[in-house]
Structures are given as C-alpha cells and as structure tokens.
Amino acid sequence: MLNAEAVRRSAREVGGVISGRRRIGYPWVLLACAVASVAVGGGVGFWSYGLYVQPLEDDFGWTRAGVTLGWSISLAAGGLAGPFVGRWIDRHGARRVLLVGAVLTVLSYLALAGVQNAWQWYAVSAVHGIVRQIMIFMPFMTLITRWFDERRGLATSILGMGFSLGGFTVLPAMAWVVESFGWRAGFVASGVAITLVYLPVGLFVLRDPPRPAEGGGVAASDDGMPLRAALRTPLFWMITLGLSAFFFGFFGWLVHQVPFYESVGISPSSAAQIVAVSAALTMVARLGAGLVADRFGRFEPIASVMAVAGAIGLLVLFVDTSAPAIALFLLFWTVGGSGGPMVEALLLTRAFGVAHFASILGTVIVIETVTQILSPTVAGAIYDATGSYDAALLLFAATSLLAAALFAVASRMPHWADRSA
Image 1 (cartoon, rainbow, N blue to C red):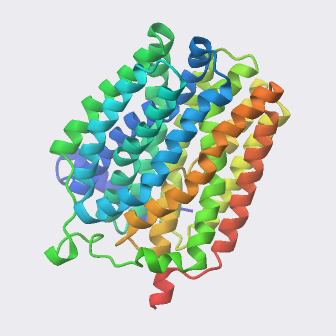
Image 2 (image 1 turned 90 degrees about the horizontal axis):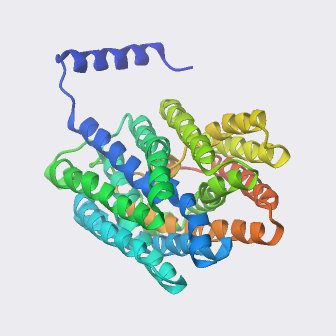
C-alpha cells in the first residue's frame, strides 16, 4: 500500500500550488511540457501507424508485410542511431538535440506524404526513424531522469502517461483525418502538429540541468557507471535481453492492433476507439506504477509482473474476441502496459546510475531494435500467410513470458550502487 503520509504531503503540495501559496518548481513545468510533447509525438508517430496500413495496401497493392516492413526499417534506423544520439545528448545537452530532431521530423513527415512507390516508402521511413529518435524519447527521458531524483519513478511514469495520452487524444483525431482526407493528409497533419508543439517547447521551455562542475542539479550531480563498464556486467545483458523480448510483443501489437480488430470484423473507427480506451487505461495505470516503483529499490520484479500480465491479455484475445473477452484483455493489458517507456529508465538508472544514462540507453536501444524490427513484419507475414493473427498473438505472448523470466533473473544480480558500496 502507498504511504498515507506521502499521499497527504503530495495533496498539500498540490493544494498549495492551486492556491498560489507555493510556486511550481521548474522540473514540474518541464515534466508538464514533456508530457504534452510526448503525447503529440507518440500519437502521430506510433499510435497512428496502424491507420496507414490498409490505405497503403489499397493505393499501392502492397502486402501487409510489405507495408509494415517500412515500420521495421524505421525502427531499425532509429535503433542504430541510438548510441550516437545518446553520446550527443550526454555531450551537448538534450535541448539542442531535440530542436534539431523536431525540424528534421517535420520535413520527414512531408516527405512521407509524397511517396509514390515502395523504395521511396522504405527510404523515407528509414530517415524518419532516425530523426524521430532524435526528437521524441531519448531527449525527454534524459531530461526527466536528470532533473528528478527522489521522485524519479513518479516523474518517469507521468512522462509515460504522455505516451498513452497520445493514443487517447491524438489517435482518434488522426483517424478522422485519414478517413476524411486520406493517408497523405495524415502525414501532413502530423508535421503540422510537431511544429506547433515541439518548437515552442524546445525554444522557450526546455533547459538542460547544470553539470556537476557548475554546482547545481540534484540529479545532475549523481554518479554512475560508464557505458564500457556497464557492457562488461551480466546485469546489462540480462536487462537488455529482457527489454528486447518485452518490446517485441509491445511494438508488434502497437502496429497491428487496429488491423487485428478490423480482421475480426470491427470497423476502423470502433477499432480506433478500443485502442483509445486502452491508452486511457494504461495512462492511469502508469501513474500508479510510478508511485509503486518509488517504494521499491528493485524494479525488475515489477517489470516481470507487467510482462506476465501482458502475456495473459494476449492469450485472452487468442481464445476469444467477443466484447467481454476484449474487456478482459484490456484489464490485463492495462497492467502489462503500465510500464511502457518508463521501464527502460527505471531499470537502467537504478542499475547503472544517471551520469551516463543517455549513452547506455542508446546502446540498449540498438539491441532492442533487433527484435523490434522483426516483430511487425513477422506479424504481417503471419497474417498474409494464414489470414489470421492467431499465431502472432501466441508469439507475442511467448516473448512476454520470456521477458518476465529474464527480469526475474536480473533481480538477483547486483546494481551499480551495490558494487560501489
């Protein structure tokens, strides 16, 4: 159970802010802007991808595997860029990286709107994956982990709520744009949304925490294990393999959830509404997960429970797709998806500290990407061959259970702070 005094203290702080007796500290202003930005970036860049699958198939006559190969190429390019983006952030700050990424991402959306054939789709998707990596996830997660110390679990979970918020608010709007004006208009609208949100936030709100030599920032002065040292620990590889298995199913389902619901006879608009409800539920669950995470020194057991819950939810859909079954799936998937993007941050910062977090995260993303690029394409190929997502659901459930086992093993290994002590 949550500590009652901690809850009362948080309530008093909120009341003080509302009444004007207490000023909002900059880290919380940063977090609010980061949530809004991640909601828009995640909404147009991840949640909405499934909306383009059927229109692209209809316009170009491509197979489902061929369409989702573009997503896999995008993930691969972004993953390979991860270490370079991480070093760039650690050396020059997240604000500068994010602004460059935002401008390039807008241009890539306009290029996606103009593709005319398969090779253009794949080439532009690759570029888009790289610049999206520069813009959305790594800069904001690095800023939040460095500006927050004692409440890092809560802060990262709130940031993860932003990703779910994108599915709840942005996805229905994008579904309306694509259905009303076509898939090209959807990409143009995505570029406009990024321009209106990311550039003002990057220019007028974001600032990097002071470096230790400048004497500021609680989290900025924290120490940590360098990347080379982390690579030599069994813990790094156990966590990385667990994350790779976990996100295999997570990203595969993210791409194919709208097409899956359509394949069982649900209309596109109703499918988008189901996904929006799922996003809303996980948004609330992530706040709870963050509060729980701050009460425990190890996050690996929590991540293991999340992976098991996700696997159970997918198995429910394998058995039945009636309305009650979908409701039961949403219940388990809410628990399984309550970690979302915060899983990486909480596992890695607790295992290796925050000083070299961006570089370590970038390297982990490269390895994760090996499985993430396979997941959507394999699921699409399964559907093309069988006309059903049944085998894909079993595959996603199996990899989620594998992730749970790997996290359980990692929970028995020493962290960086344990080694230092």
